[in-house]
Length: 607
Image: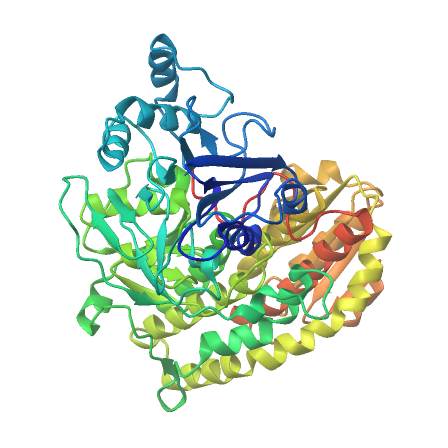
C-alpha cells in the first residue's frame, strides 16, 4: 500500500502524476515512483524517501501522455529503490502499481521462476506484473483478468502497456480505486485526492471490478466479464485543507480546526425544542430503534477510542448494553450476530481494511451495520446499511485529531437520540442539546492551553515513558492521549484506568516517568485525588488536566492544565485538546516528522 495515481490524456503525464502523488502524501509512505510511456517505451523512476528525492531524478521535460504513480508503505520487502513501485515486466513493456497483499505470492513466484521469470524486488506485487506478461497474448484486458483470477488476497492496481499507448487498466478487490472522469482525459486514484483540481467527477469501483481507460472513454467490467453501468458522482474536496497556511504542520492546523469541524458535525442536526437530534441517513425507523437490545461498535486506532467514549455515553443515556471491538479481532472471532444487535463501524477514511472485513463478516451473517465515517463515497460508506457522516473535512496529518473529536460528537448525538426514545426526559435532553451547541466555543476556549502545554511538553521531552490515567468516560481519552504520543513522538506511552494503578502500573512510577491525569467533576473525582496522592508518594510527577477548579489539584500538580467545565458526557471533547498539544510539542522538541511519522500510514488499507 499506500497511494495510486494514473493518468491518460493530453496533458504531460509526469506533471499530473507528481501532483497526484503530492496530494496523496498525507496517506504516509516510505518510497515513491512513476512510470510513463514515451514512444512505445516505458520509462520508470523510483526512489526511497520523500517525493523530493523522486523529483530529483525525473526529467523536467517529458512529453508522455499516459502514466502511473505510487507511494509505497512497506509490507513485503524492505524500504529500497528496488522494492518501490511501479514494477516492470522482464521485457520492459508492462508496468504495474499495486496496493494490497497477495497471500499466495510465494507459490506464484516459484511457478514464475520455473517458467524463466526473474525478480528484481522482494515484494509480492512484482508477481502480478509477471503473471500479466505470462497471460498476454494480444489482449491486455484478458491478460489482466486471468492474472487477477490467480490471486488470493487484496488488490488495487493500475497497469500500463508499452504496445498499447492509449490504454490504462485499473482493478480493485479489497483495496480502494477510483476513476476520475475528465474532458478527453481519465484519471486513476486510490482516493479522489489523487486528482484534486483536475476532475470533479468520479466513478467508485466495487470489489471484483476492472476499468479499461482510454483518453476518450472508459468501460467497467465485472469478474464475469459483463459490462457494468457505473454512476458518475460529483466529488467535492476543499483544496484549502491541503494547505498549511500559517501553521508549521498540518497536525497543529487540524488541532486548531476542531471548533469549526465540530460546528460542521452539529450543523442543523439538533432539535432544541425536543431535546434531541435528527440524524438523516441512519435508515432506521422508530420501531427499529426499539428493537435494539445490544450495540457493538467496531473500529481501529483512534476510532476505537472514540467508539469507547460513545459506548459509555450510549449506556448512560439509552441504557443499551454496548461493547467495543477491535475490528481485526472481531473478524476472526466468529461474532454472534442477531436481529437485536446493531453494529456501528467507525472509520475516518472509510477504507480501513480490518473494519471493512469485519463489516463484511457481520453482513454475511445477516447483521445490520451503521457507519460513522468521514469520507463520502468510501468503501464503508457504500457498504453499510446507513450511517452518519462526521464532516470533519480532509485530515492530512497521519495522526488523527479533528476526525476523532467529530466521531465522539456524532456518537454523543446518536446516544442522545436513543436516550430520548427511552429513559432521558425532555428537560435533560434540552440541557444536553444546549451543551452540545456550546461545544465549539468550549473547544475554542480549551485551545488557549496550547502555550502552557508547550512548556510542559518541552520539560518532559527526555522522559523514559509517559503514563496517561483517567476513569469513566475519560478513560478512552487516556488511551487516545497515549496513542498520540506513541504515534508522533515515538516515545513509549501507555494509557491506564486510574483504578487499576495498584494492579501493576504503580510499579512503573518513578521521577523519570511522568503521569498525566485526566480529572473531571463527578463520581470519580475523590478517587482520582487518591490516585494522584499514590503517585506523588512514590516520587512520581503528576501532570493534571482538569475541568475542575478545586484548589487541591493545583497543590498536588507538578504541572496543571485547566480546560472549560462541561457536562461529564461531553468532557472528552475538551480534555483531549491538551493531549493533542502535548503530543505535538513533545514531538517538535524531539525533532520528529510530525505529519508523517515513521512506519505509519493515514489509511490502513491492508490487514
